[in-house]
Length: 350
Image (cartoon, rainbow, N blue to C red):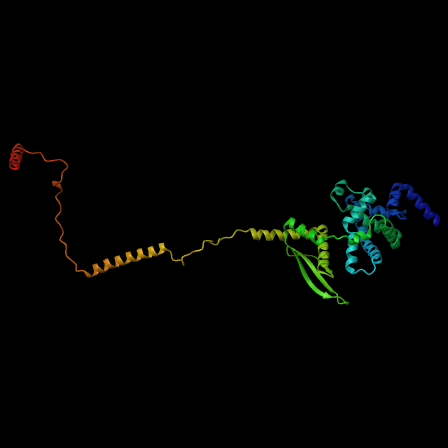
């Protein structure tokens, strides 16, 4: 029975010799069932199907590996930091298993070079390496069990590639990252306190949630406002990166808000302030002129009403025939008479 198993391993090893050596360099041991690891390195863009027509890719192993990683890393962090509170342990585990960390590990370990995918998908998927890393952990769990996964993470990852103490005490300000993102994209961001309570030891516990454009994001609970807001911000950033429907809803809400704000106002209020309550010289003059005029009119009207009426006879019409622009022609007798009259006037003056 044992010999048959060894023969199968040898046959499979000769067939996938390069893959065995590559996995040994990554994991530190040779796989038993190579099919798990082949599946872990198969991206969904390949569109490979089994004999029954079902798609074969690493998504299911990625799901399993994500759960195993949380348990293994949580176990390691719990034992490495005795006496630390839940919030500190949660933040440390989150930093160790976050997507950026796993992506960098996959690149450094050479996992990216083993992934089977279409070139287009690989160049446009920044999470492919991290997803493959999680899928490999799922394959190790199915092939070797939980203890081997623990040993792999402790001896190969956290002792050789990651300084767990440095990661734990490194401050990552997720709140500032979220605020920076919201300012760049001009979206409305709020941190809302959900509740404040006390734990069994009497220590205050705060719960905050993130609200972007009226849409709820992540919710965080911690022993301080800062800690709870950090957790809520981290969860919100993960939603924005991993859930397209969430970020679509945020920008749809922003579009509706800005559209309402940009609608034109039908009637614009007048900004000119009337100062008619101030008495000026001009206004006094105008009032006097108006009063004088009114009084004069009133007096004239009154006089007309009181004075006796005089009947005026109609004048005779002018004879327009006597009006001429040229003098009338004089007769000879008239000329002689006028000359004699002028002569007598001159003698009298002498």
